[in-house]
Image (cartoon, rainbow, N blue to C red):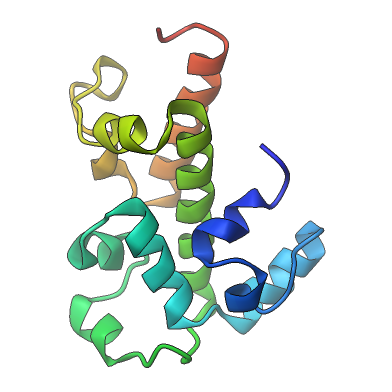
Length: 142
């Protein structure tokens, strides 16, 4: 996957506010906060229901509903949103969109027979899922 390709999951540079070409730029974007419409774009691409997406960015559904499309999320919610976008961009590339959505809802032995979707509410959980992607790419998990 091209570096920073996850930006497309969030609506592209026009929604993010700029093309991202370095981690320094990404940190700046996260600190400023992404607009609510970036989250909406990820919701459409991922097919995640609002309650699941809200939990993943550590906000209540009610709080998210109060955000206007152009209103910026706080840095911590933006950071979680970026990590989730990276996970989905990598998953879509590895599996294809429909197969990845199915994979996210399927219990996995590697996760103690839990569904990957259950792990997106923590940064550690997202990192664990991304580690599984690496294993799949190297043939450890067929």
